[in-house]
Amino acid sequence: MATTTTTAADASPNFQNPNFQSHHHSPAPAPAPAAAAHDGLEFWQFMVSGSIAGCVEHTAMFPIDTLKTRMQAIGSCPSSQLVGVSQAFRSVLKLEGLIGLYRGIGAMVLGAGPAHAVYFSVYEWCKERFSNGNPNNSAAHAVSGVFATVASDAVITPMDMVKQRLQLRSSPYKGVGDCVRRVLRDEGFGAFYASYRTTVLMNAPFTAVHFATYEAAKRGLMEVSPESVADERLVVHATAGAAAGALAAAVTTPLDVAKTQLQCQGVCGCDRFSNSSIKEVIQSIVKKDGYAGLIRGWKPRMLFHAPAAAICWSTYEASKAFFQDTSGSSSHGS
Image (cartoon, rainbow, N blue to C red; front, side, top):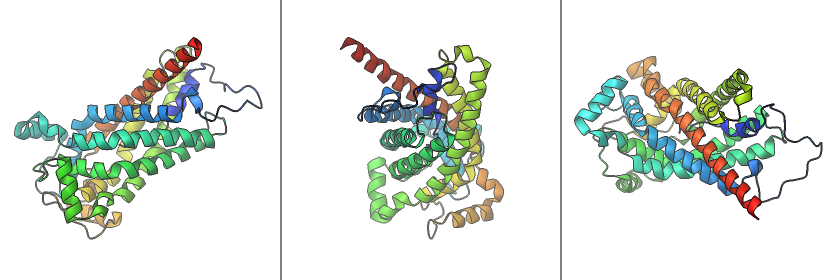
């Protein structure tokens, strides 16, 4: 996750008004009820929408994530001998069948649902409080994204580590439960968070790049056909999200490579590091594979994050719209 994107949720208020004007015309608007959040939704509804979006996104894109993991483990893991995306895909299908592309999906589901629920709810909560009623407050959105990233990464990192170990070719683990038990027994609880610092440092610039790109793409798309923005908002979310996800993924690939090698250390012959130092991991990669090793897997990473961002934000906005429509129907019926 990529975790992964941060700012598309702020687009809903803009889409609801084609003139892009704030809905708060009064200089002193009446305060909203304490139980309700902005967009007319409550905290739990953001959590449910985010959880659904995360599960849909990662399930749809899991095969690409498997290819990325294996390609990034090359050099550190001798058993991974995949070079290109197409070669990796053919090799997995030939040697392991379709099921090989989905090893570890159980760990992903266990981690992605709660992590995305935390991510979106924290993001929406922070955005509402930091934006001071301005839906276009870029600084507030960026800061909210950082808070959301730190919180969601704390939730997903352990299961992301389990997922990546299961994704390796010839993984010694039988499943999620077996992996968790053996890691606890052999490496201790700290092994689950060996890559947490790297993950947060990776997702901070990912968030910044994604935010800037998403907002620029969204504005450009709305300017092309402002009269149809309300009708095509999901298309705008998907297109802008895809562009932002791809660029942010490409820029942060080196840190993602370091994260993968930290999470897979000691498995299938992969290198083991004396500590969780990002510097040590990067130096090891450069020494063995040159600087090209730091961008290994950038193609499948972009292939993952572009459609993943489109799927995630489209699903998230659709879920929010469902709750908004349901709340509206309930209020009219009462």
